[in-house]
Amino acid sequence: METKLTKARYLTGMTVFTLLWCGVSGGLLYLFSPAHYQAVYAVMPFYFFLFSVWIFRKLSEEGRTEHNKLFLFLGIKMAKLLLSVALLVTYCLMMRKNVLELSVVFVVNYLIYLGMDIKTWYVCRRQGDASLIKEVENEVVS
Image 1 (cartoon, one colour):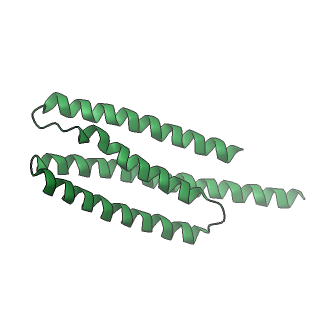
Image 2: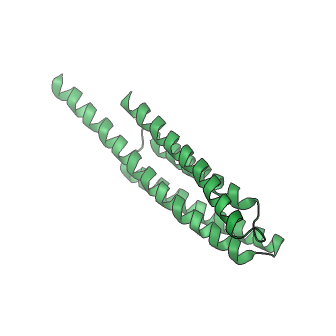
Image 3: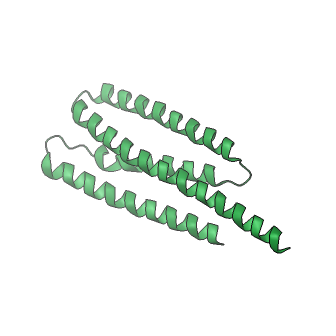
């Protein structure tokens, strides 16, 4: 039960952070640079949020060893990086305006959610440690 509460709290916190970040980052960009503002700026954090939730769900699945979780985490991070660069280049080639601003905002969002993904790894790892400790305590009591 504690594991489900941890998952729910973490996902709720990440959702609230993403909604606040969408509003704050989009609002600040519109406030300071209305001529260069694009609607994609406010939606960009949602793309990274979806990846973070997917990583969290994959790492939270039972039956994975720490070794497998580490390779899964690194593989998903590499896929996210490649897909993100491909999307950024495609969008920049299609729009051909405000490329520098878009790239900077994209990189800032990428780095912020990279930190969130590292926190996801930490939460999932602690969750696994807690499950292991409870199993050992149950075996000792029996």
